[in-house]
Length: 461
Ligand SMILES: Cc1ncc(COP(=O)(O)O)c(C=O)c1O
Image (cartoon, rainbow, N blue to C red; front, side):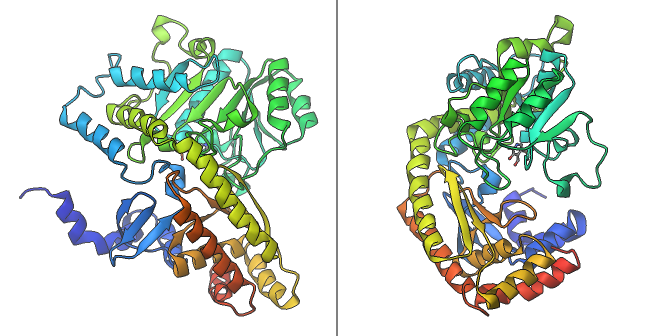
């Protein structure tokens, strides 16, 4: 019998949720069903997804930020197909593969001065873990600092840098000496750094969890303090890099000169897992400090040719289609359109962001009747209102979004950087309609609330 993946996908497409319930993660499958996200997607192209019934969805989730180029970009696809067709000698391991060298060179060209050594791995958490090891080896210091509300991944080491108890609970003890400091509190930071035992401070220049943007002087000052006390300054650009915020690196907004930068997500063109940790030669070489330590840090699939080809194609497309500038200008339009809604809907507390990373934060309404519905939802689970908005955007407008993290009333938008005026109009109109519904007692947005509250009380959402 011949094997046909196309036939397999076609004949089995209605089994996907049953298979996940049986073999993978039944809780996740159940949540998708409860919130009405249990679609059978069959195609993805550009900024859109299509389901088996031919319905189209505007994807503002972008696979948590991997589709900066949009889905199925022909240049990334072609590069991967060409590598496959050429039967390249992939993953020889005991060699120095060409494509890794070329991608490293292209990345270094886009880095702040002095970041000229690259390590490739497979995921964002991998890149962060690498940065931590590099920092320890280069400083001979044990401790790490991270910011409240930080998210740097969910492996055991990166979890120790995670500001959310909801992620940490059940997995302790985590790494000792990894401590949180509050964003914008430079005194607290200096008090920690003064001990001269901190290897590195790691920051997301804009935090993914709530789209929290630091005060203007915070990151430059934090970097200055780090250098004063011999601590390395790491910018985790896994989500905010690759043009997402209107610059290649988000840290460029503050002219930062980090010691280590991490990249991942859309570096793989939306096709191949890949990450890069980019640092100064001296820091890199402190890990690979002798010939017999040349592989002391390594990962089997690092430098794989499909990922390297996808990375090279992605950087080419970002330049060729001027997507970084587009992210800045289209992002500004979207931010303006959404900010105008804030004037009209009292439950929108804030609209913020840079480029095409935008957060919309909600707050309790003043009207007593609406407040009762809000309080019922929020008492059952903090952040439930944002979830109701996400559900309404999907159900009524085919717009796919996400709540920006557990227990926050913030929706995060991460559209592909290729969106244009048409999509900006669609997004603003969809939010306008949903917020108008939410402003009415008994409006459709609230109709789902009772059911969600029940699930939340049983802790199923
Ligand atoms: C800033 C940041 N760092 C690290 C990670 C972890 O990446 P991964 O999920 O690929 O391990 C993420 C994931 O969302 C992230 O946003």
